[in-house]
Length: 67
Image (tube, rainbow, N blue to C red):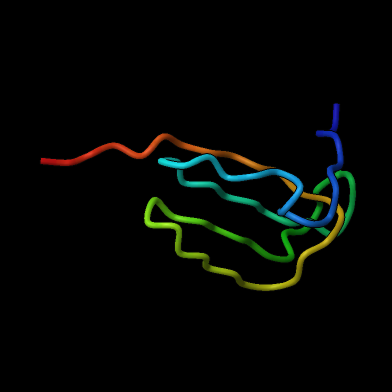
């Protein structure tokens, strides 16, 4: 069972405050080959690499304070 395809632009899935968000882009709906990534870290900085497509996965993780 292949993961569902999502919309191409990460702006449609917003990154919640105090979360790190990661989009990984693929060449097709079967996610055969990774083509790019977008990461928004806990400070709100964006890091992009490769090429975005209309096929991606999205994950988010709560930011924690380290002491």
